[in-house]
Image (cartoon, rainbow, N blue to C red; front, side, top):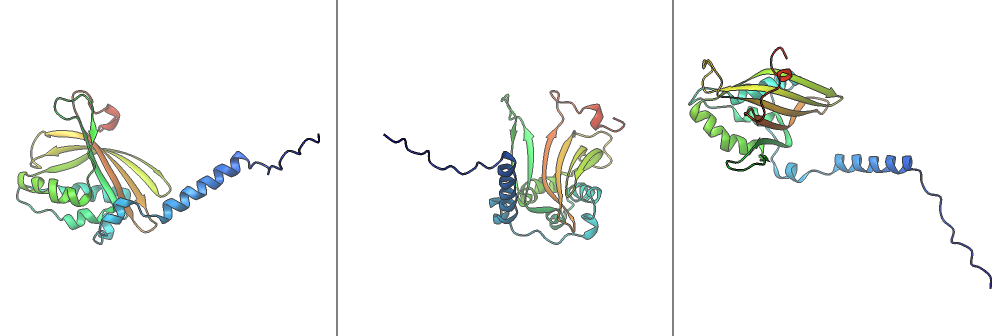
Length: 198
């Protein structure tokens, strides 16, 4: 009996080649396919160039546009102009009586239409008191510590917390990709490093 020759096997590609090919495939797919959320949202209104020329400018615009006295209309077109199509806002909280925290995802339009009405009705002023920013190329992240008051003249804030703001520069302007925030509470006081002088 003559043994059969083993089947010819092609040389295996190196792990580096596989990783490079996979990386290029992921990057190409991500760049060319719209996400479901961006496909469902209308394009944002045009932004004031001064609002989106830098990280500090766009963060300042975010706080300015949601703040105002009771009965004062907000410029929601300005608010929407700051967000990339498909952008999100995500408050994190623990429902009453539960032990776990949850994230609620809303669109900028949902924020303006829902939460925005209560801000205009009762008065709301939010200011940044500290910021820690990291940037790599065209992406950035700002850990923005805030204080909230009903009236700007209130001596003490009724709430504090941290806005985690993800940003992207498309080569012509900055965009808010997401805002992810948590209010301060007894279980999670704001660390000194995220407060003025920290």
